[in-house]
Image 1: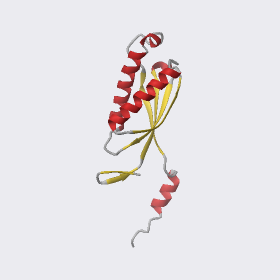
Image 2 (image 1 turned 90 degrees about the vertical axis):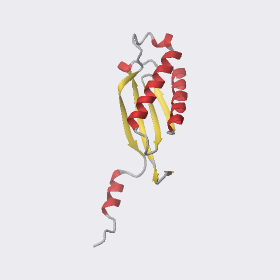
Image 3 (image 1 turned 120 degrees about the horizontal axis):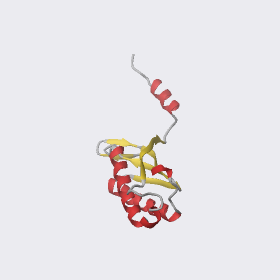
Image 4 (image 1 turned 180 degrees about the horizontal axis):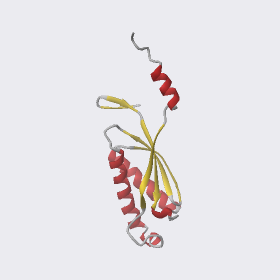
Length: 132
C-alpha cells in the first residue's frame, strides 16, 4: 500500500506493447535498452516499474500507478519516447523491418492485476455488516 495526499492505494497494471505488424525485430540488446528507457520514463511519471520482460515482438510491464496518473496518457508518452529512442539507437537494425518511423502497434493491452480474486472481493462487499 502507498499513500498520496488524501488516499491510500495499491494499483497494479499489466501492460503489453506489441511491435507494429508483430515484426520480430527485438534482440536481447534492444530489450535491455527498452527496459532502461522504460525505467527512466516511469521515474519521470512517478510510476513504479515492478517487472519488465519481452520477446522478439512484444514487451510486458508490471506497473504500479498512483491515482492521479491517467493510464492512457502515460502509455502514449511511454510508447512515443521509447519508439523515438530505440529507432534512433538501432536505426540500421530496424530499417530492415520498417520503412516508416514506427515501432509500436497503435493498440496495447492494459489489465489491472494483483490483490484478491474478484470473487473474494465481491463476497467481502456483499457481506458487510449493513445497518438495519
